[in-house]
Image (tube, rainbow, N blue to C red):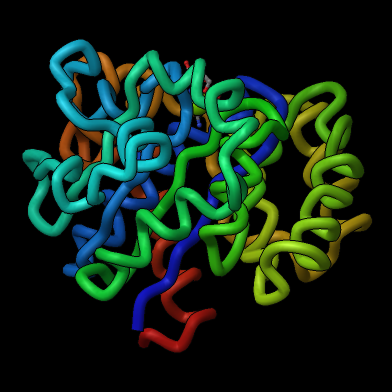
Length: 256
Ligand code: ADP
Ligand code: MG
């Protein structure tokens, strides 16, 4: 059994990449074969997992636009059980280049279908937009995990995202589920953080993960070393919280 989860929210800076990297690394630490697909032209999860985007030969772009097999683009990371299908800045142009291609919403799904069986989990780090690349990511996924930052305007744009998910369920991927809403960058000292938690839980109830990701320096500094937090400081609150998220997802999906 293999499960593909898209990490999506068209808002930038809410913790998509941090979640993709650290959830994937935690699943790998629990010995589940995991692939990160970097579907953001900014290539932050690519560099965050120690791959220089400038040296990437084949990226998700070549897989989607030129039909290069995913197996020829996937590279190993320094973490056991963790591979990455990297991104490259030229992914920026893919939306325009793909406009005239047939089945343009299915390109990522087709690319991933070839290698899906080799992984327990595929985690897609989406770009901060609801454009064609993100539509491809959602079409290629079994579920979507939505990070929400414990900040002002936390719920802003969420209606639009949920509406996009509905349209995709209707037209492109009827099996797409919502894995859950993840509260990120929580600061126990801030009243605002607690207000956001209450508001999101009241509004979305059981859709919200029990695990809350705290604001933690190890999570923000580890990409600079090209490693996930669990490899940087496994005891840190940030690393432990993502390990708990991984366990919550495993349990929810009947892996344990
Ligand atoms: P997105 O991919 O949604 O744009 P990122 O994951 O890149 O968001 O996070 C935005 C910034 O916030 C990054 O600098 C990241 O290191 C930092 N960040 C994300 N989550 C946390 C956290 N829980 N604690 C501290 N810093 C975080
Ligand atoms: Mg990102």
